Length: 153
Image 1: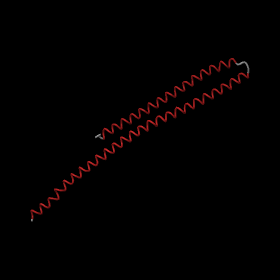
Image 2: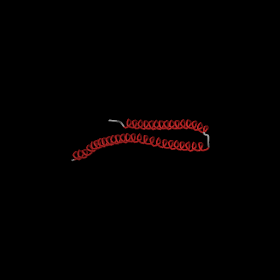
Image 3: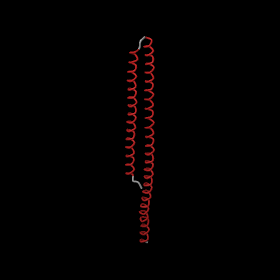
Image 4: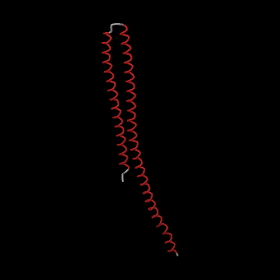
């Protein structure tokens, strides 16, 4: 039979494990996001260097305007890619955390159910012991008046 103190310790351990798992998931997601941002910055630097080189080689206003249109389109693509990646990472992060929390809640629910069942069992046994003890105390008291009544007769 598991004692309530042991179960409370198990619940505490499970809570601490949940907190550690959530912290780990959060840090891993932050790392992924920073790596993604770093990749975007590197790509932007490379494209900026290429754009500067292309602008320096432009020979006419028409070439410069076409180049600027292409650069604006490329920058818009990078911005959309960045925000979609950011939201995707945030969504994945939330899904992972919710999954971990759900698993921990299920474990906690099971532990509480075990604790409740144990408490109910102990209460039932205590009630039975108390009833037997009370019954054993009542019987001698009931017999005493009969014995006193017989002595007086």
